[in-house]
Image (cartoon, rainbow, N blue to C red):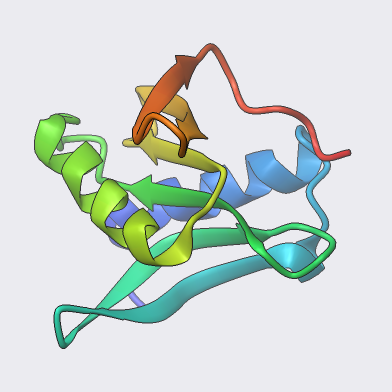
Length: 117
């Protein structure tokens, strides 16, 4: 497997989730496939809660890729199907954390994601 810049970001972010935020490896899935509008897509990192529901979606970009509204639109499309409580977008240099507000169909930016409980 070639270590692309995006893969480097993903591996480091998984390490951060496990070591710093204490998420169990058993609840973390990489490149989970989903179908949106009859097209196969993959989440970079998908974290489940203890009940087996989608808790966090992480979208990783290479460090050279600027995070734009398109990046948020991409992860929001995934979340229409997955209904995770948190969305994270990172390029390894910048990290954006959002908590979903399903009632108002929006997301609230956070300073960081919560530690695993």
